[in-house]
Image (cartoon, rainbow, N blue to C red; front, side):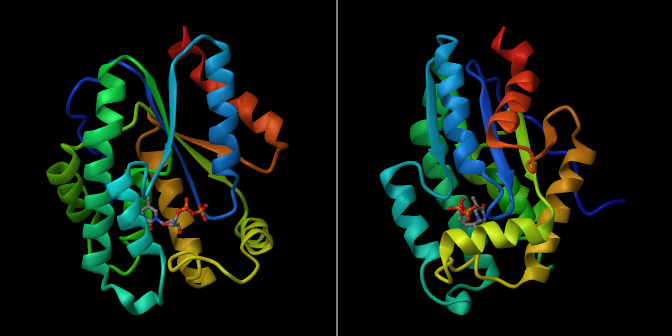
Length: 220
Ligand code: TYD
């Protein structure tokens, strides 16, 4: 049996919930913005948000998580803080928006915790999902796009963007980031209906077109 299991979907959402995932430097934030503009042009009400963060309290936790030295938090604390930020974000922004019938586009969500916080081996996928079930009642996106780029290209892009000033987690070594990307790819294999692997080496416009094509039946 594999390390990752398909998480159960708890709760029914009315609006559509889309998450964008992938390693550093894969263009998630650019695509999230482009997606919002395109969906709004279809007349949809869309909220653009991000994790960790998205609400005032969760942004405070983001600062705690991303600043300082790698050893500042042990892995259990780190996973709990991500789950706490997410609980706040889901309760105050994501769920109310979905219940209102709006769309939510989120730059990273639970799959980032599954991909990053499991690397040390201290916490299993089931542990991370337990925290998510407790904190956020197991809310899962309707569709998740993994922006996939060869590791070296993503590393170069992230380097050019951060210029040696990457955050506490982004600054971890290449081996760590390779495992993270492999974890993301496994989610796409395991949950092909929800999780779509998108080749992010195309132009930004072509990547946005791919995402929209993929969402066509949900847009209606
Ligand atoms: P983000 O600001 O999206 O970074 P980037 O733009 O470089 O992709 O995310 C901040 C960092 O937090 C990033 O290194 C990934 C990490 N992260 C986790 O480790 N677990 C999580 O659950 C989330 C949401 C992010």
